Amino acid sequence: MNVLDFARAFFTDSAHWHGYDGIPTRFAEHVGYSLEALVIAAVIGLPVGLVTGHYGRGGNTLALIATAGRALPSFGLLVLMVIWLGLGTLPVMIPLVVLAVPPILVTTYEAVRSVDPSPVDAARGMGMPEARVLFQVELPVALPLIYSGLRTAAIQIVSTATIAAYVGLGGIGRYIIDGLYQKDYEKVVGGATLVAGLALVTLAVFWAVSRLTVSPGVRRSG
Amino acid sequence: MIRIESVTKRYPDGTVAVDRLSLEIPDRAITVLVGPSGCGKTTTLRMINRMVEPSEGSILLDGQDIRQQPVNTLRRSMGYVIQNAGLFQHRTILDNIATVPRLLGWNKQKARARAAELMERVGLDSALAKRYPYQLSGGQQQRVGVARALAADPPVLLMDEPFSAVDPVVRKGLQDELLRIQEELGKTIVFVTHDIDEAIKLGTKVAVLRTGGRLAQFAPPAELLSAPADSFVEDFLGADRGIRRLSFFPADGLALETAPVVPVDADAGEIASRATAPYLLVTGSDGRPLGWSEPDKLTAGAVDREQLLDYGRPFLPATDSLRTALDGAVLSPTGWAVAVDGEGRAVGVVSQQVIGEAIRDAHSRVAERADAKAGR
Image (cartoon, rainbow over all chains, first blue to last red; front, side, top):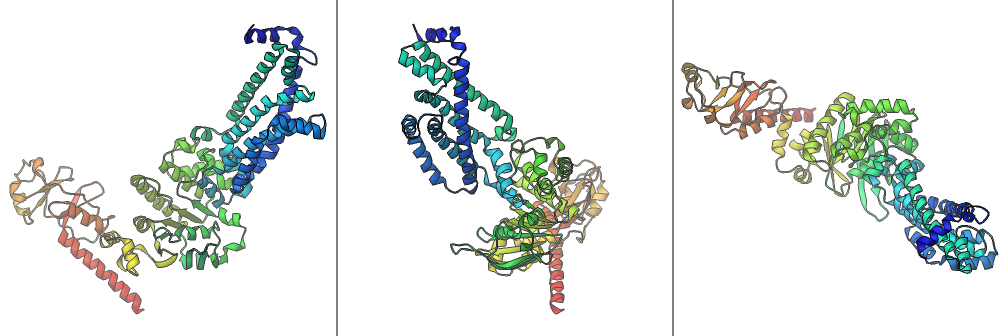
């Protein structure tokens, strides 16, 4: 049997489509963890990136944090957190957020900093308050790059969120871990396919959001 | 009126960008700040809208220190145009122009209506309203920059090398447009450039600054050309300041000769009677000049147009300067310039010698005026 047969067998088995271990439930759990981690990472990364980018300071510190964040192994961090904090969602969220903050923070900083300085100068010279300069002049132009940082973070979260299953939580990771344990390769392949599918859906969502919110003037000239 | 009073800008590293500069910028006129790079002209301009704060001295606007009002209120009362236009690429042309009215709290509809009005004023096709900046040429973008600065009808306009990034032909168009707009609106304009020709063309008064931010001379352009304060100003004006100065003398006083002008269908008698000058200007049946010819080479009723000499570039006595007239005479192989009316019909000719006399007269009149002023 090859991978495609495994996948077909997994997805055509009606038992996999309902119940607490059914695909919709696991998928929803996975999306839930991922969204939660992404929102927390964005709440930390976006404001810090926007403000440091606007004032053009703190780039070195950010690079240091980013490198440190990327160097931390998610799985190791998860085990450490579980030992420290016990089982639950929090020890899972911490490694996911640590994974996602650096790309959001660094690209947001770079995106704002690389905005052409002359419209910013013009805006200030016309008497635009500083907050409006950031949100109405810099942000709309920086948006495509900021989205790319969020997208990278989101995809890393989606693929890494499978580790939640190691500490007894749900999500698509359940299929992979249980499948490996039970030597049920149908399940393993099915789970992996679902994770890949979700990553593609994430890409599509970002593409759509970008189409809707980035000005055509920026999209075409950028 | 804007009064710059003994203003110095010193940076923390000790560099002095502007050194005890005092200037009285007249209302409703174009004041040009010109000088080599590092002369502090842009810094001076940016101190007027407090983009840069002076280290010493003060700037008064209508008698009041500019630091007495909130900085953004001050800036919204002064239009600001910068080198690369600095348009907001995510906004349409109309919304770019509407920026300051929106900042002042106008509603969207009113701000856009005003923006549309401004597009017309600066010579932009209304079809461009919904476009984005990347879809416009450099010259068009700069027009949008000017329109944006004028949108809230500020009494003061600050322009920082606005036309230096566009090619010479477009630049000339933008300069002419600015002069036209200024004639209609009468703003108090402070204009920074490194181009002395631009300064002389646009300035009502020109402030020449030298490296280190010190004022070398502050005078109307004609005076700058006739009486540079020192060798720095003289060098900065360039080698042909004498010729350029002629731009300020009108050509309407030139004594035109009509005798050497003959129509293409003139008979032998007429040709002979007009052969007082070494050359005759032949005109077509519409009165426009065709070219020069020696009288004895003209055959009555059968002029060979191929044989005629080029007549250079004609000038309009009513509006052109002695510089244009002299240029026409120099360009013509005969050494005579052709004067035409608004329709391009030849109204007379004038020799280099006569133009030379007119130049001497103009110079002596200026000198008399200067003496009279000094004696007062």
